[in-house]
Amino acid sequence: MDYPGELAAVIFCQGCPWRCHYCHNPDLLPRQGEQQIPWDQILAFLQTRRGLLDAVVFSGGEPTLQRGLPDAIGQVKAMGFKVGLHSAGPYPERLRELLPLLDWIGLDIKSLPEDYAGLTGVRRSGERAWESAALVIESGLPHQIRTTLDPALFTEAKQQSC
View (cartoon, rainbow, N blue to C red):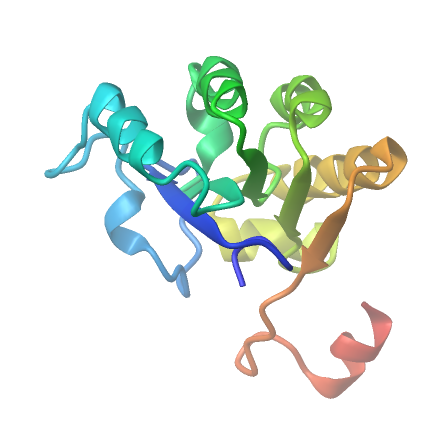
């Protein structure tokens, strides 16, 4: 599920700039978590899974918030794993740099651009997410663009316009 067609480990990254009320990982929203695992321990674990797993997916929170993500992706790829990314696209400029390093991406598009601020609590978040979607599509990278349909937010007419 986390990387279609591949057996994958998922690394959950701490922090997200948005505050979507239906977030499935609310414990990951703050930039600092209570239980952080040192990167060297994650690499040691992945080392024991070489030949057993196909891929590693960086998820969150929002993994593109992490400045060390390009280096982490490089280290994981050097171990022979494919690399996937789950993102909501809040940082298109960072995503543009990451796309050549990835093998797959799952991008969450939450609504039409003009409705984003009401979902995320952040002005211009819709513009950023849709810019990220355009980058993903233009890249040719294998991807899924996904939407969570919350009946409290989406009327049938609104769903048909998406």
